[in-house]
Image 1: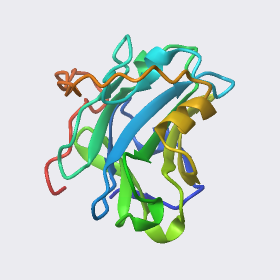
Image 2: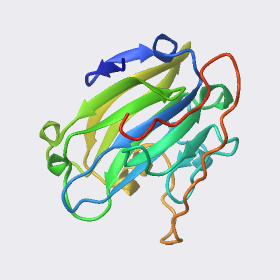
Image 3: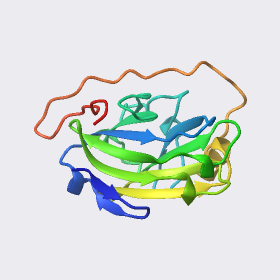
Image 4: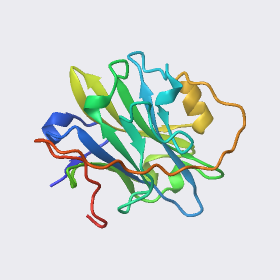
Length: 205
């Protein structure tokens, strides 16, 4: 059974699963709304000191592929593969966010969630809905953070600006206007080992 999280709840990832090769699925939708779902790899000061750890549609993986954008699958609007034992030591937090692309506000979203899947089995879920937000244009959904060991926090915090404002909030640089075609990342093959290997969830799981 997946452990249900409420906003503000935290847990050691090792209490959820022995696996370190994790699937993170985000479901966020709303009538007429378009979302950009991203992951910020932050340093000990909670800053984006290396832009290569801003994983989004234009940069679908970090240099050593510890964070990979997988695209929509298994009922999730967007999904990521996070390999905890590959994350370099300067990265202390992974912040998963959703921002509106175009008109709208977060109060208009349908019920959604962030979930963690290990070895094909859902081990944690944080559910949220539009009644928790007002006019915000972005939401910080959940964090993986390092505090002696990797932990998960259900955040659910609205943010007034869009993606550019969120990027500046984390100390990143907003690039000049360029609109290359979005690329879809290909999932890497699962690895074998004693701990549960990486496996995306089955549709409808």
